[in-house]
Length: 106
Image 1 (cartoon, one colour):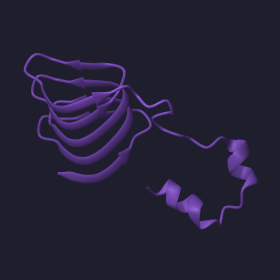
Image 2 (cartoon, rainbow, N blue to C red; image 1 turned 45 degrees about the horizontal axis):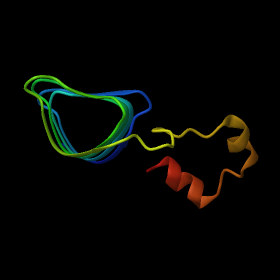
Image 3 (cartoon, one colour; image 1 turned 180 degrees about the vertical axis):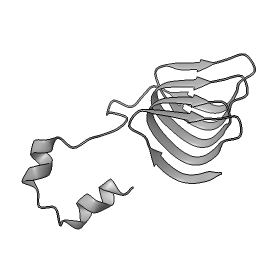
Image 4 (tube, one colour; image 1 turned 120 degrees about the vertical axis):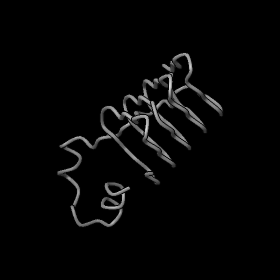
């Protein structure tokens, strides 16, 4: 089991033996195991053995026959699911500021 906050730039696949607890941010989440917590993604697929318990933020949710979802759904937030700092902004700021390292290591 993995606990905490995950930020994935592309796709996250939770296999049938996988178990996540916490917050998950990705472009696409495919669940065939168990997620407990908050899921934020452009696309979320719950497969036949998948279970999601918590809150989903997505505009594209599909649940395969046999899949289970317990909780609430909301439209995707207006901001990007994964925020990346443009190169020109990153290079113009000093690299030793403490608030920058905290944001990167969330």
